[in-house]
Length: 317
Image (tube, one colour):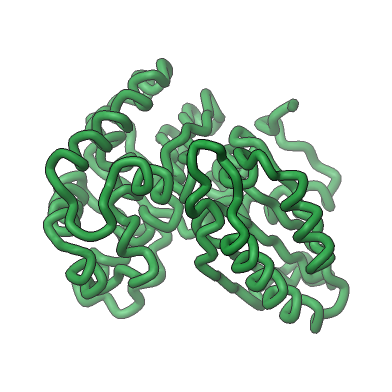
């Protein structure tokens, strides 16, 4: 028996999933934890992680460590994504985390992050021909899947925190700020030449902002288990209506929307712009939501490696 723990340190939140893998091959999740640390807060044009954000992150990691340290036969994989990738003080930060927690963070590339997203989605949802979008705090990963294989993948600098800090007020969203943000995101999407090959394909959405969209709609329909969004579908019209409602609300109003976490209310508009514009660009009529992402992709890779198999879609670098 093994307890496989995966920590995912993003720009907005840090999350941990611990899966117990039994000797007979069966497995079950024994712990899931999340903390909004806002690691990328106030990084500015110099891309420097700030002391307050680092302190919050280390505090969250120590809490995680308290949990997994109580378990037997723990195998830990801790990865860091966009904010840490960009940080000019990355090496100092990694040393600081290790000194305080004993956790060795592995900074993964955007394409590796996208690959793990693909692994997680393709193992648990019909994704034969689709475009996968994972919107995080500091970046978005986009994967074009054709005939059950990765055709193209990319990590682009579009995230809920980064878009908000660059363009959007956190309270009332003005018309000019929304226009400027959407113009910027649209230009980034237009620069991804191969996206045109995904025209009319369904979108599969993951990441905190996209999942929040699903939760809002499930709560509005009085679905009891609003958190269980895996496989849930929405039409593009429903996505647009919900986005319009969110944009029309000030910060206090957004905090009162059922299904929208108060901790995410200030960045949700920025977090949903990539999805809204991607669906429009692709002329996609629906989105399917995935509860599985980076952490589950790492788990599936681990399971494959322990069986001595090799995935043909794995990146070579």
